[in-house]
Amino acid sequence: MKIGFIGLGQMGRGMVSRLLDAGHQLTVWNRSPAAAERFAERGAVIAACAADTLATDVVISMLADDAATEAVWIAAGLVRQLPPATLHLNMASVSPRMGHQLDTLHRIQGSQYVSAPVFGRPEFAARGELDIVAAGAPHALARCETLFTILGRRWFKVADEAPKANALKVARNFLLAAIIESLGEGMALAEKSGIDPRVFYDIVTATAMNSSSHINYGRLMLDNPDNPSFTLKLGLKDVELALQTAADLDMPLPTAALMREQHLAAIAQGYGERDWAALGTYIMDGAAGRIHGQSHPHKK
Image 1: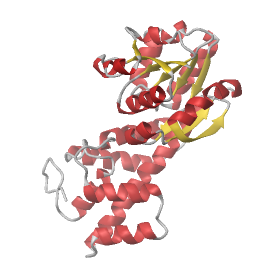
Image 2: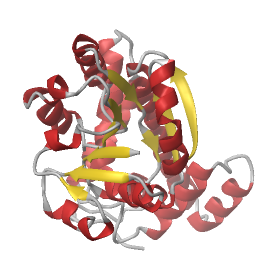
Image 3: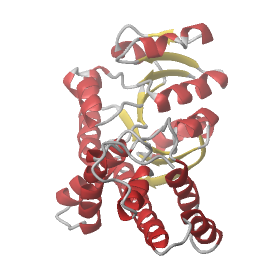
Image 4: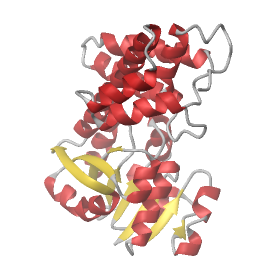
């Protein structure tokens, strides 16, 4: 299959590697050209501009956020240049608001559009172990199934309306933020009671709280890795997307409002470039009196 790929951040690079390993012909483009050059020796064509990726069967978009998506697809007019035979598979995490805008523009253009955001970190992308939530017209989804099997361990159909996949991603990441917040508070409560937080972690993840999210994020809270693949600052973006979506739907989301304040407070104390799980570390450090106004978190 001839595939265009736009956006070669940490996630995009792993996905491109998987597609090349599977024998597909790729034309890749990134706003910072250096990220694309590494794929030339593996047979990928390096596009001089984003429009050069469109003469393909499918063009996959993996841009960083709404602003990057708006700049490339809307402001620069890329959506108006999309040939009718080329399907746009947007796998980036954008807001439902942006999802609706893209869906409308593709309908006006008469082009096919699928929204398929992913769950997973860069290491999952490199191994083809992403979870993919996809929405779009049935015939358009059918064209993407081969790609989903290469990029993910499983995929789920959300609906025929593409923006609903974006809403599901936002709702799911809101739940993940709530797990991080509550697990951090639970660990802080245990430690303040004189219990080793690692003992608390071992017990709760061996009993009812044994989901992969509790296990993985609890371990990250305790170990504080030096080179996170998803930072607390990026987690704040997900919480703010949940609040924006709720506001657009005229509904309250009080837990998200609380978590936004917690994220901002942790960032102010220097935790922003650590893993998203460091929100829990911040809560634990604050309860134990380990912060005292310093600009960098206590490293366990």
